[in-house]
Length: 289
Image (cartoon, rainbow, N blue to C red):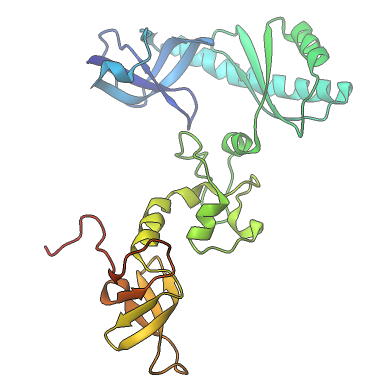
C-alpha cells in the first residue's frame, strides 16, 4: 500500500496519482507537480488515501509544493497569454491557408511549451506553421489534432437534454458507444435524435446499457408464445423499462393486447435460439424481503 493524492489538471479530466510527500491536502487545493509534460499546476481531486501498489504506475512522482500566491499569479498570467496566443495562431493559420480549426491553447506552467489543439477533416501539414509560431513565441510548440468529442469537452455547451455537456461537467473519459445500444434500448435510429452536439452518438446511451442488457436477457422476445393468467397468447411488444409485455390472447385475437409483468407469464415457445421454456427467470438479487 502507498499513500497518494489525486491531481486533476483540467476542470474535467483524468485524475493522476502523486506522492503527497508527507503533506495532508484537501480537495480543491492547488499544487505544483512534475509531469511528463514538465512542471504543472493542478487541483487536488482526491485527498490523501492508501492505494494498492499494483494500482500505481511506478515510479510515483512526489509533490513539489503546495501552490503559493506567486504560483497562482503565474497561472493567471498564463491564461492571459493563452488568449493572446490563440488570436496569433488564428492569424497564422489563415496566412498559411490551412484547413484546420483551432480549438484551444494551453501553456505549460513553466512556459517550456505551448500546446495548440485543433480539429481537421484529415491530415494537415503544419510544419511551416510550427516554425512560424516558434519564431513568435520563442519556445517549444506542439500542435495536437483532437477529435470532435474532445472538442465538445473543451468548449462545453448545452446538450439536447437542456443540461450542460456530460463530457465537460463530470465525465473523466469517453466510453465506447455503439448503435447497438440504441437498438437494444428501443430508441429511434434517427441520427439527429441519438447524436450529441459533437455529431457522435450520445455518451448517455452508455449509462443504463447494463440494465437494458439484463432486461433483454430476462424478458422473452416479441412473437414468443406464452401462457398468461388469462390464457395462452403471443407477445406483441415489450417495455424494457417497466418489465411489462403486451400479449395478444388466442381467445381474444381482435381485442387490444393485454399487458402483464414478465414474471407473470410462462414461455411456451420462444423465438430466441436455445432459450429454455418455462417461467421467466428472476433477476439477480431478487427475492422476497
